[in-house]
Picture 1 (cartoon, one colour):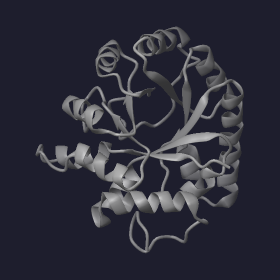
Picture 2 (cartoon, one colour):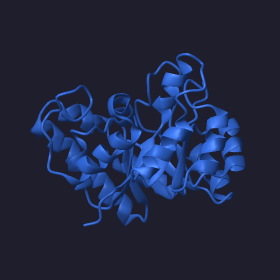
Picture 3 (cartoon, one colour):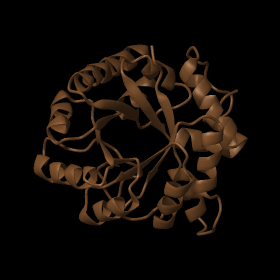
Picture 4 (cartoon, helix red, strand yellow):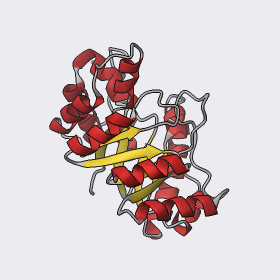
Length: 255
């Protein structure tokens, strides 16, 4: 069975930089280290409030990334205009709320199909593949297909929270992800996963059928603070292939 590829989200490298408004650490340099370690692609979320990734970062990432560059963005006119100029390999539409720490739920495609369809069409007309970040809900999967998306990224936050409660809770959420993934694939959509995935919980989602990419950021960057980006990326790739690991001896990382 084909295993998912790893796309590393470098947002939180920029979070550390923005804490002091300095030039380092540089998310573009981090992206190069991730790719050298085997990552298939790089993801960055240019939020409307610019709390971490900045406009110049995405311009430089577009030039520097050798694999796939995935731009996460809100479905707003300003962000669509920027993406049409930048032309990333993929644009992932996500919801944004100013007070959230990170993206807390999936896009409501079924709730506003006309706006999503128009955004998808505007991006695809520039040769950009479009992914919609949605909860693993069949109605949202079907609405995504109806809006013309190429890909859905299923929100794994509920699975990540359930994993900490034990195997039974995790299995329930894995079944929900599998059902949504199978339906999406049956409709001709590519399927990615992301949000809250860690060295400890990633292995099980790699066994789900038809998953193309995993977008993982915070846990890798947290580990990289201790061991560096290349090693942290290699450890995540190993965790994706290995048997379920024991709890790490160091916070957020491997023993």
